Amino acid sequence: METNLKARVAAGTAIFRGERILLLHRSLHASNPGIWDLPGGQVRVGETLPRAAKRETLEETGLPVRVGLAFHVEVYSSVSKRGKMRPTVGVYFHCDAPPRKPLRLDSDEHSEFAWVSRVNLDDYPTVPALARTIRAAFRSRGLNPPPAEPRSSVRFPATDQFTFPVPA
Image 1 (spheres, rainbow, N blue to C red):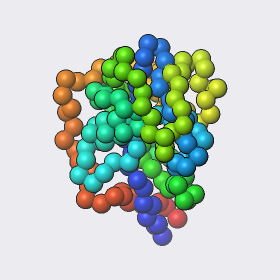
Image 2 (cartoon, one colour):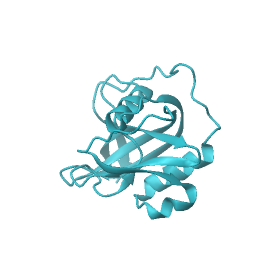
Image 3 (tube, rainbow, N blue to C red):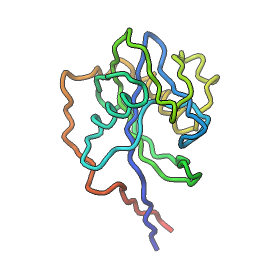
Image 4 (cartoon, helix red, strand yellow):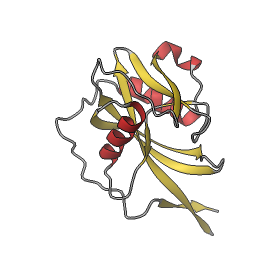
């Protein structure tokens, strides 16, 4: 017997300044409260993954980014604002941001930010899936520079969830 597992789709970004990656600290009122995270969020119906990554990053940080190619896909469980576990498919992109533009955080979602070097990552607690994603961002950095124009025409389906069969 198979059970369908409904999962959300999220688009996230890895933004570097020099040898440091941008991490955001989730506020106590947000989903996954109290952990460090990459910018990003849920893909809207009809939205491409790169457009969602760009929109979410702008909303959360105030940074207008140029979205590059995807570097990592991860299926993970996240905690909703109501405390429920929900499976999520995260697709992550390398992005370029203006180097001198200051960050403007969405205080409902994040309480602080940090530019973190690879050697200091352990000082910023996160969930295991995101730790893998951040390590992948450092490994793949510079291997896929952002294109001049977004290339993806893949749009999110006309539903807010994907359905995955799960063996019983």
